[in-house]
Amino acid sequence: MAASSDRSDRFLRACRREPVDVTPIWFMRQAGRCLPEYRAVRERHGMFEIMANAELTAEVTRQPVDRLGVDAAILFSDIVLPLSAIGVDVEIKPGVGPVFADPFRTAADLERLRPLEPDTDMAPVLDAVRSLSADLPVPLIGFAGAPFTVASYFVEGGPSRDYAKTKSLMRAEPALWSALLDRLADLAIASLRAQVGAGAAAIQLFDSWAGALAPEDYRGRVMPASARIFAALTDLDVPRIHFGVGTGELLADFGAAGADVVGVDWRIPMDEARRRVGEGYALQGNLDPALCTAPWSVVETAAQDVLDRVGGAPGHVFNLGHGVLPETDPDVLTQLVDFVHANG
Ligand code: 1CP
Image (cartoon, rainbow, N blue to C red; front, side, top):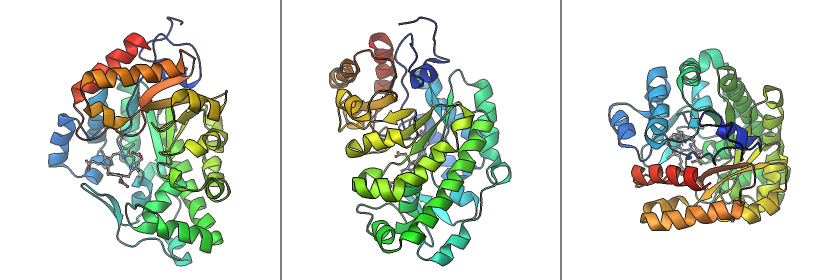
């Protein structure tokens, strides 16, 4: 492995499948969740209050970089922020997630989705991106929710188990469904382009719940809107990561949608993920986040298994298969970062 990379660029190099000194690692939901210094901020400020304040956003984004030694930062924000920024009434309820006062139901609701003007609608977020990308020792990842996952909250009104209303709208009113996904794709494109313009060095599209879809529905009714987002970012020349949970049957599509890096959850081992995704993409993943609550020997064995299945092939960004669980001991995450750097 080339020794020419270091903490400042090993994440970007791995995304581009270039040689790295050691395997880079970061954690989904590393900002927030398990860190006591995050909880201290949250005791004093609400989620949208943090997102409306560039200093607080920057502080919370930086916390895991300083404490855990990860190789990338992810902007502290939420996938519903662009909707909130254009005036859609959404709250983030503690212990629940995003909740919409008036869920999306009919064609008249499309009128509520005006175009996003990032410079005015998300000025504090972009100020935070500018200051973070100037100051951080590691690259900053910008992100957006993919149209399906954002639509699932907007149509259901909040988190859901079965996505009944969403899937029903998708099949019963295909024209309205594709109009909704198109508007949500436009919001994601505007937000992501602005984040990169302000200094984000990579982007991740979270289609967290796409794994709930039958592959045929994903390909025909969802993937085109996500693919349009990736295509609209090509000229920016930043790595594009595409992540979802339970997407074992969709992994090849997640690459083909236009990503450079495919996120893998813990249900598919990395060697099998490589077979499914094919060559030409980097992979990100895939330690089961639940195992990070077990004694260190369990974490170590599982992390070594992830590394063994990748087998030192270029193009691996170590991560969990989904976000850090709130009950995780942050010291285990620090130990995991050190382990991956020493063994990966
Ligand atoms: O302080 C709190 O209230 C904690 C909960 C919390 C946090 C820390 C929410 C509510 N959002 C966030 C921040 C957040 N959300 C980040 C910050 C950066 C980081 O990763 O550290 C990111 C990337 C998100 C993105 C997000 N929000 C996703 C996609 C990522 C994923 O984990 O799949 C999703 C699905 C959401 C919706 C959401 N927001 C919050 C919750 C609890 C949820 C999930 C609710 C559900 O289960 O449906």
